[in-house]
Image (cartoon, rainbow, N blue to C red; front, top):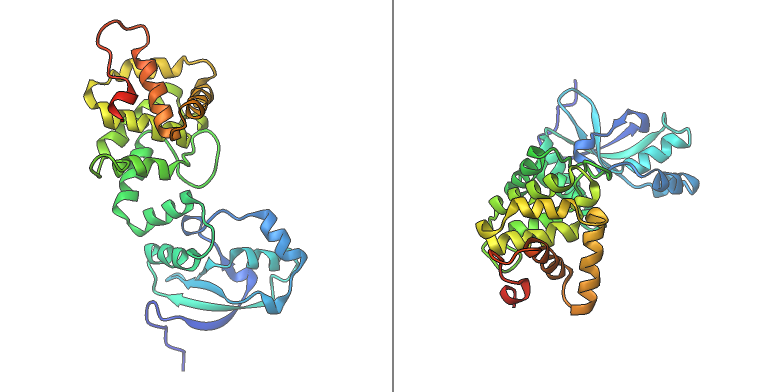
Length: 273
């Protein structure tokens, strides 16, 4: 008589071959080859523990927690050997993502990976911000390089009002990503956390009184590009002994007011005091 399929979310212990365990990048962090090599170099079968696995409706097994241990087994030529697994069945993709987060909450997880997991889980804020980034052609995968967005904590800080304004600042976040993309395209340095936070603060403070066209032009032609703007903010931070976001905001306001005798916006230190 066949073994009945477990109820959803009720795990069973099972031994599975390492090479029968797949990985879905949507609900996993990127594989770290260095970490795999370290495990493989000192591989002790009895110390590998239990792999957390999801049995999907198509009969395939996907690792929720333990992909580096499974990869180390394969690297050592032990892909055909059994590993102890705790198998969940009947999980949706969002439930797999939630399970991944729960099993990794006690470990250091990059903010961008947590953000991706929250998107898959259907977290309202994460889904909204991901949609804004996607609209402007930015990818949020955990990878780095041009076209990839990593400063999710800084963006969410602006969405939440940065502790100075009410939360739910979706329009400000949309404007922020528009400005950064217009100024520097999909340059990875153009969306570093210092710029996201500092320019976001300026947008929150000045709103429609800000000349966004001039802001984009001044940012785009600044000496050294986005790295040059960040350098200016860091120097000012040391001079003022203030937070980098406020230093960046002061630099940006000065750029907007540059060359103007009228229609200047108030200096940042006056409005942020």
